[in-house]
Image (cartoon, rainbow, N blue to C red):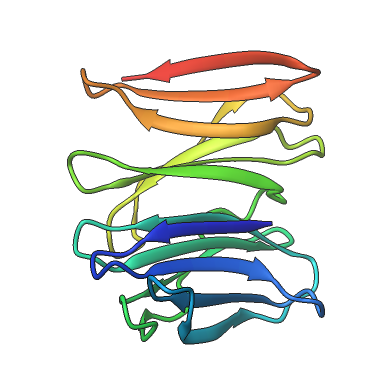
Length: 172
């Protein structure tokens, strides 16, 4: 899985799992030349959940190392701003997810487990501190294609696929 975001300086940061299953990121300039790279975690069962550019230009990378949902924050040059912080959620083995930068500066993160843990969302501020604790939005079962977006009225929509059907839920 690869997840990327455009940086304010025109470069692109993308996260990926390498051939040894480590999670890494690279920062590429407009010509596709690597200008920076770093190792995020070496835990082999890890998955990238979200890569979100923050309003201050930093990038929040959310990933899982089996059960704990973790994060790190980097600046636009690839320098660590906040090393692996406290776990965002220790109750779910997340498989996929999505994030959205909200108009108030907080980050909405939705994520899913293919196991019996269901799907959840949480909201954190730009330092990674939880503002809204993990909250279930779907009963157990595999979801795919999770996407999140803030609507014009400030509500948040989560769209997802389950058993080849599309669903959505809106939170205010």
